[in-house]
Image (cartoon, rainbow over all chains, first blue to last red; front, side, top):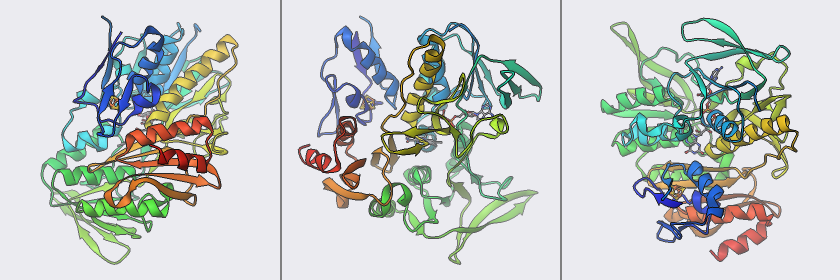
Amino acid sequence: MRIVVDFDLCESNAVCMGIAPEIFEVRDDDFLYVLDENPPESMRAKMEESVQRCPKQAISIAED
Amino acid sequence: MNSTTVIVGASLAGINAARTLRLQGHTGSIIVVDADSERPYDRPPLSKQMLTGEWEPEKILLPAGKEDLDLEFRLGVRAKAVDLGARQITLEGADGTVANTAFDSLVIASGASARRLPDSAGIAGVHVVRTLADSLALRAELEAGPSRVVVIGAGFIGAEVASSCRKRGIEVTLVEAMPLPLERILGAEMGRVCAQVHIENGVDLRLGTGVLQLETETVDGVEKVVGVALTDGTTVAAEIVVVGIGVTLNVDWLEGSGFTLDDGVVCDNTLLAAPGVVAAGDIARYPSARFGRMLRVEHWETAIAGGEAAARRLLAEASGETPVVFDPIPWFWSDQYDRKIQLAGRPMPTDTCVVVHGSTDEFRFVALYGDGDRLTGVLGMNRPRHVVQLRALFEEGASFSEACERAATL
Ligand SMILES: Cc1cc2nc3c(=O)[nH]c(=O)nc-3n(C[C@H](O)[C@H](O)[C@H](O)COP(=O)(O)OP(=O)(O)OC[C@H]3O[C@@H](n4cnc5c(N)ncnc54)[C@H](O)[C@@H]3O)c2cc1C
Ligand code: SF4
């Protein structure tokens, strides 16, 4: 599983960071950083929640 | 679960209930009914990117509405009545045909409609923003380049419409009956900051002023708005008036059918409104142990969470599992000009409010709300990271003073 963020859509509202701070981090520069683009399978539920809860539909999961 | 579920409302709460039911093992038919004939779409952009013209309708389709979930959509169809005993719902098609449909379980997700000014029906140039059609109609008139728009109501939607008009370079008068915008939600101190944001962005803000009447002219048989007479004795000339004075809940179809209707459909703490019937989203009122009172939350995220929770409630009922209590931490955002306002929690306007980070002069800060030593809210302006991190303190059960200490370390 690979996490893909469309940074043209992302507005750094940090919703994903609230769900999975291990993976998503909005820093003081107000940009989102993906800390681990290939999260372990154990994080799948949280990644799917992040996809659903991103108000900008900016996150997707690629299977490769 | 292999039975028939009817969902009324194909918006955020309804579509997420449908999705959760299907993904969690509902194998029977799921009928999703909506009076709106559009494919399920998202509402927050209606007052933001859709009005400024940055986005097109295609972009606001809800992802769950596009997934292949084997749902039976009945769009353009309105629920008229429900008979709980006979377990059937009366549906009216766009062509006026009325038919009954049987259900085993029912999801009430019919949300809310925009409140309108009395006696404003049929007057050209007067708008509300709740549906895609509303947003497109207003946008078309904004594109014609009006000299001024009057926005009535400085709540979140009114503020966002004002912001979108300013982004287009249109002059805006924003009229608010209360002494300060958003005072009933954020309290006076933060209401003042929100007022200042409008003023800095060139809005003619009229506070503590009501609307006396719309001024109209009839040209070629069409009655059109030309201005708004205010209770302070002034009249503002405008070609367009946008009314953002709150919502009325879509409960008409539930009246007389045995539900408790009291500013929403009253549910228990698992969103159950009657055996086999759940409610979610803007329409659901539920007891919150976290905030010690009944809540009805008109937030995007709560509609998603509520839709999912309502679906799980039905599945638990079918399988005999213990249902999960619904009591999330409300979280809301609003985009106004270049400011992003976020609120986690549910403060009362009279709660203590302390700025714990940044400064209100720079419109970049975090404020905490407390009732005694109980943390009730986290408000941020252009500080999303802090709001999200401090929101977690509700889960941890942190007190107001602990939250203030923690905020100092961020
Ligand atoms: C312009 C706008 C901007 C917003 N911006 C934000 C924001 O920035 N942040 C935020 O957190 N929230 C925002 N919100 C709030 C958020 O969109 C709502 O909380 C959410 O849409 C609620 O979803 P819902 O499914 O409960 O109800 P609704 O979205 O109201 O959907 C109810 C659906 O039921 C249908 N319906 C009603 N009655 C019937 C009937 N009798 N028969 C059949 N169908 C029926 C309606 O057609 C509608 O599609 C905004 C809302 C609007 C309108
Ligand atoms: S939730 Fe979406 S918009 Fe918000 S920071 Fe994460 S990716 Fe960006």
